[in-house]
Length: 148
Image (cartoon, rainbow, N blue to C red; front, side):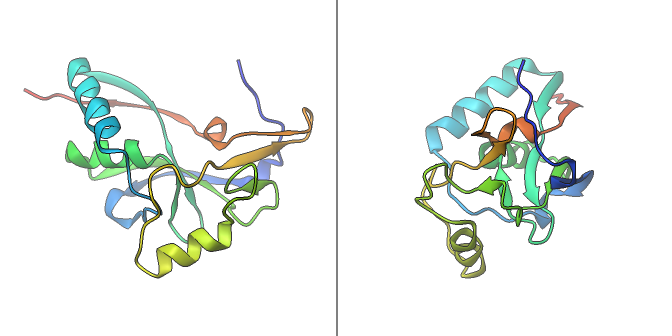
């Protein structure tokens, strides 16, 4: 089991939002997306999934582009989102600083997308004194996907 020791105010809310209000900052890996869609089709029913992590100020997807596109493929209109305070200094766009959060915001504002996996968002764990994947902040949610 993983736990991240972080300031609780980084998660600002968990809400159901309209999928079309979210903004991508990078493209997805085509075969990874199609494999994920195929996998979800095999479940044809109850699914438990990590929520998409989104900046609470800009609506930019921080983590979950493949999940976002798969859910859109299936026609879902609203999904639960974990909103975070992206401006927090505990969050980095990549553990080695190869890209910054401000660069990501500028890319989105320009209407462009980064190549797949250009970012690898992490959050600082003060107990372990290291950065961990930001996915660990995601909430879990359940939905029913009936394909018949």
